[in-house]
Length: 487
Image (tube, rainbow, N blue to C red; front, side, top):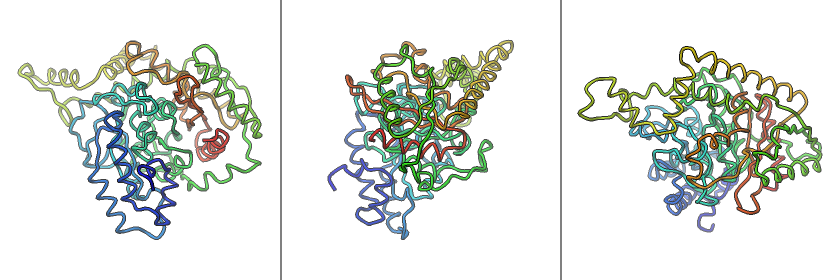
């Protein structure tokens, strides 16, 4: 094969070649490492790389190859740096966790390793997953491989950039308000957030516990289904895990291309508004809907009246939970500890450690969340947000009585230039206006590549949301839509 061709293949394509012994595991790993050597200095998609360990594991896997290889056998994957990996530094993109090497693997990582997967490195991210651009990492911003002057989206910026560029075959990310789907849309790849509780959060370092979910960044829907079938399912180590059995990926996608496969597509009128949504994004979304109708699907206009409050609701809940979860970083037990002659007592050490260890966006969210939870304001802010969250969920329950899936843009805006919006955090928050809904309601959602802007050549994403625990049907539908889109 030509140089770097293997790194552009999907998981299922590589699995086919490995099973037929057309290539070796070492061939795949070396090819991905060549791409990293060529592109990483510009993209900054990784915080840590494990080249030697990856090659050693490749050789070990070659010595003990089973007759039929599991789908992830020998596949190099990127792991977002807020998902713990045993004896491999895990920083969450933050100074405050420098040097932290967990003593255990996250359940998602362990299941990948048990399936023969290879961890190639820990991917860059907005600090503690707090960001939508990939610019809030202590280790510097990640750049969009489509155009390196632009942001890749966040917070799973490194995972999306690695998959889009060939620096990983696929990657794990985390999605609290769109942090898998938004970078997938900005980088032109697939990003899948499963139903809350169907993928273990054990070993995912918490940002907002009621919203966080491990998700997948892949080159196509089939690979997303493969990762979900391997990683998903009940985990007794996670108290929020549902007793849910994830089907085999082939079963999930079976029949996506049959002529009688027809779905009712709900299109919220709140998503298709000219004010606030880029014209090219609306055009591409409308073009897909017309093609879907030509292919026999039914497009149904629907309303999600409380979605207008989604951003405010999401950020109040997320920041409140973050202020609680991040209180554990004090410089005592692990990670960074401030030093200096002025530190004469414990309170000063706490304050200086957190001041030096956390970045500007993390501090902003801790402060807002602490205020929202404080005495006299809890009922007005956090409690009210939880009530609105319930109303949003009820809107979705009503809509899903009429339709099978809900479709719209992944983001209202195209990727923007690095540094362009850093002085205006509110405008950055608005990039998540369509994605936060799936996290507030716990439903599954996937972002598919939907062409590019004709002027700038930047990717556009199409989001598809499904009923809770109906992830297999959502993936089958997404595979059908992928075929319509010509991806």
